[in-house]
Image (cartoon, rainbow, N blue to C red):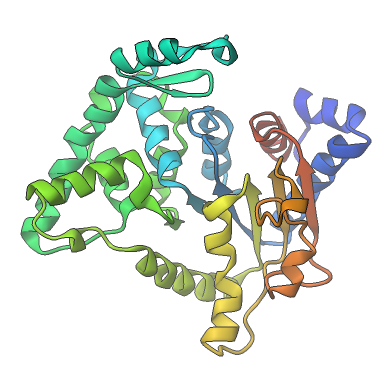
Length: 326
C-alpha cells in the first residue's frame, strides 16, 4: 500500500463524523473499487473547471483513477479557457455586494462572472473560437462529423493553443483526458458558450451543415457502446459532482440498456457517490438520495453508495487527494 501523505493522514485523524465521515468512507470505498480492478466515471456539474478542479482531477486521470467523464459544455470549455487565459481572469472577492451597475461595468469590460471569478471574453472565449473554428470548417468541408469533446481534443493535441498556455499544462484535466483519449459525454453541449458560437456560425453560413457536430442522441449511443464493452471487463462506478444533466444523462444508460433495448445481463453501477448541496424535498433529481436510484434500476441494494452534503469545491479536491495518497 502506498504511503499516505499529509492530506490523507489529516483526513484519517480528523474526519470522523457527519459529512466528514461520509467523505472519508466514500473515498475509501472509491479506492477499494479501484483495487478490485473497477473503473470509475466522474460527472462534473456546476463550474468545477472555473474552480480549477484540474489541479487534482488531472492527476486522477493520469494515474488511471478516472476512466470516463461526463460534463456540461461549460466545464468542457472552461478548463481550456483557464489554460489559455488564466492571467487575465479577474477575481471579485466581494461578489455578494455587487450592484446592478457594478455588474453592467463588468459586462462593459467583457468580463463574464461566475460567482467570484470573471472569465475574460477576448483572451479566453475568442481565442478558443479562433482555434476551434478551423477544425469545424475543415470537418464541414470534408463532410465529416465529430462529437463536441472530440473537437476540443483536436485543438489541444494539435498544438495550436500551446503558445497561449498560462498555467502549467499538467493542471488541465481536459488536456490529461485528451492525451489518454478518455471516453467522454457532454450532454446538452448546445447551451454552452462554444455551442452558441457553433450555432452562430451555422446561421452565418460559415458552417454549411449543423450535422458537422454530432448530437446528444449520438452521445448516448456512443456511451451505451462504451458501457457495454467496459462493463464486461470490469465493474463501473459513478462519482457525481453536483447534479443536473451531467449526472442524469450517463447514469440512465443502465436502465436504457436492459429496459428499452432488452439486453440481458446488463450490470448496474457498482459504486455511487454524489457531492451535493441540493434539497431533496422539492422533488429534485439532483438532491435525490441514492436509494431512489434503486427504483429506477440504476443501482442495486448492495451497491456501495454515499451522499456528501457539502460544497464540491471543498470536498472533491480533498477526496481526490485522499485517493491519490497525498
